[in-house]
Length: 176
Image 1 (cartoon, rainbow, N blue to C red):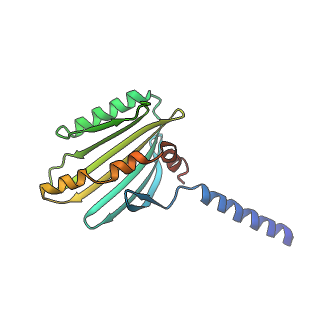
Image 2: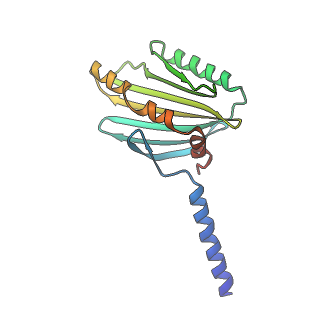
Image 3: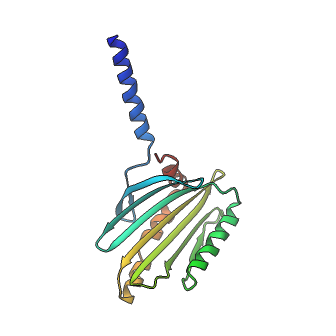
């Protein structure tokens, strides 16, 4: 009886350890900051995980989303650009496409009527017939125009471009 109980205990501990090791990390280093996991779940049929932090009037979120839409990659990117332009008609979009055509980075300053400035950076990538989007948003509570330039020069775009697209997908595929 004691051996059976011990065996069940060891099996339970191993199962818990394996489950934790496959889960998405509780924090993530991104663009020089540590973002804490805020939530994970489903939005429709898409799976997502969100990391973030709020400090000194700055709020940052990085959301990774596994896209379930079966439309071709190019169609999805076209819909995204059209949607961004419709929501932000005055924003100047910066679009970088990798040579293989299955990896696109879009960044812009979101149109806001108040003193907040939002830097938005989207990266949408196709990996092995799976499409994943990483959406970075940084909100600044600022009023001076010079600050807009500082926001544009933030390292988030470079950090998002440097992430391996397979590792981005791993974040959301292991979300618990």
